[in-house]
Amino acid sequence: MQQSKEIIVTLTEKAAEKAKKLLEKDGKQGYGLRVGVVAGGCSSYMYDIGFEKTPKGNDTVIEEKGVKVFINPESLAFMKGATVDYNDTLTNAGFKIKNPNVKTSCACGHSVG
Image 1: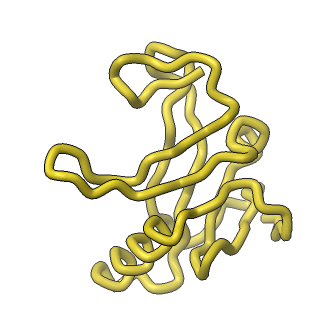
Image 2: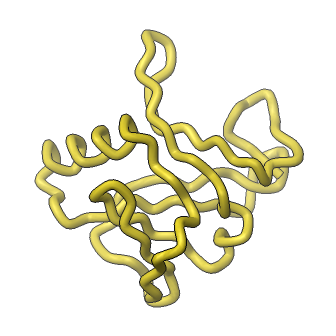
């Protein structure tokens, strides 16, 4: 695990507050938000976002607006400069990633490349 002062991923205020509320509601204080990409989907990669108790041994860990963020080494370059936001609309609620590194995306909205 590597602690990083460099901001690789930014959380909006809305995303940070929602993450804190969800962790508190589920009794998971101290957990972190995993953000990254995994192989798959129609555009080569899919975003991987979720809560985890502890980082994996080779993760980079940053603290952003009071939330620990875990990023695996394979995702670092692809996620650099990305912003995690939280949308809460009648038809679509959840964490959304705005990523300047995306060259292609798919109509499904979950697959990027």
